[in-house]
Image 1 (cartoon, rainbow, N blue to C red):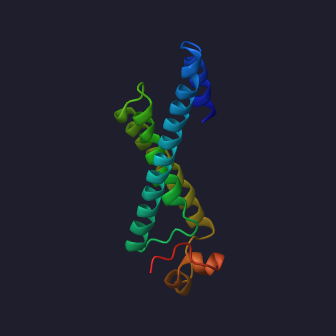
Image 2 (image 1 turned 60 degrees about the horizontal axis):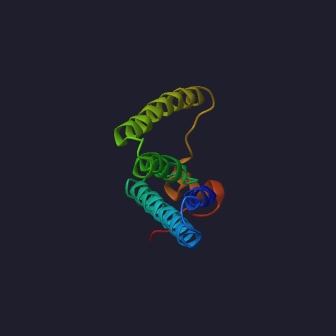
Image 3 (image 1 turned 135 degrees about the vertical axis):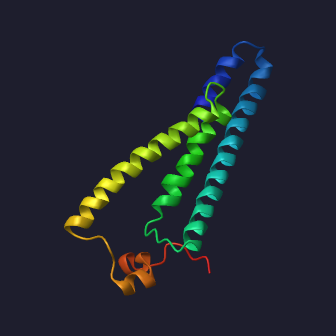
Length: 143
């Protein structure tokens, strides 16, 4: 938002004095509304991912997948909406490249953990949910 105010001041310096307030208000309002719209879209993406995980009966104890994977991918791709120099295809390629790297390194780490100390919860903990048994509360209450 401060960057929008800075651009408004630059733009305002090129016009008459009485137009300065209008230009500042227009630019700040535009970027504020765009920020709120991106925030709401990211929230919808995150909550949709939570519901998908619940539907697939995949337990994400701390909600990292919806926040970091789903909303992070949205934020990366959304850069192309506001930046005319960015390309949707390049942004999607970046998300996929990071996904391949993360999947590869995560597989290696989890494989090593499984071979050494084990990674499974007990059966009753799995049925109740890792969020409830490990943290003591449900992460999301959709029911």
